[in-house]
Length: 219
Image (cartoon, rainbow, N blue to C red; front, side, top):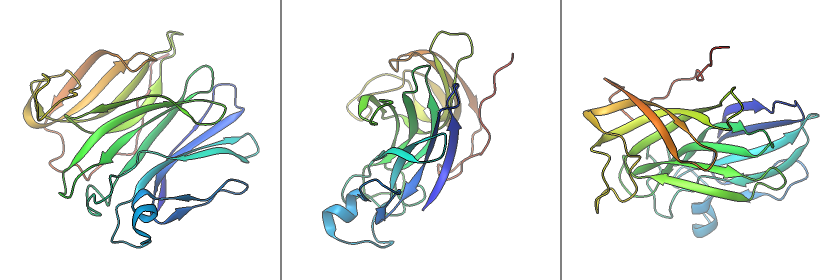
């Protein structure tokens, strides 16, 4: 289990954190959360895939809400990209709603993962929307725009694709990539629509490797 990202809101009244867990997860004063596979099978050990989590806290670090996201499918490989789903990044919008980004493990093979993005309500973490991209290996970090547009930037990694919807790729990100894997930086609107994307060929060969730094914006 671990924390992957921490962000403060622009008004410094909230903190959001994200990461991954197996078995159960408890924040003081909130109900215990069970991982999807543990809840389904009753097993709480390394034989089940992990889930991601997102938690919002106040300025004194008292938990406000926490939720299991993204969830690994029941039966997903416990070794898929580091043992299941993870929320690799969080960010606030101007209303203190929280964006979560990462990947979801959905199958029994190591590379059966999809890139996912969700927007969660400030008050209780309820899902405003979720986007699943079947040709994205993962999203790592999110950064809110500093121009007042409400847009946000993400980075991550694509699978080789034309960006066209097919039976095997039903919800593509819409970006082409000629290499086996491509690094990705994109700008998206507050409803999760893609504005533009840039790819960098020669990204790491394995989807199990992530980098720690965020996207930073010029003044």
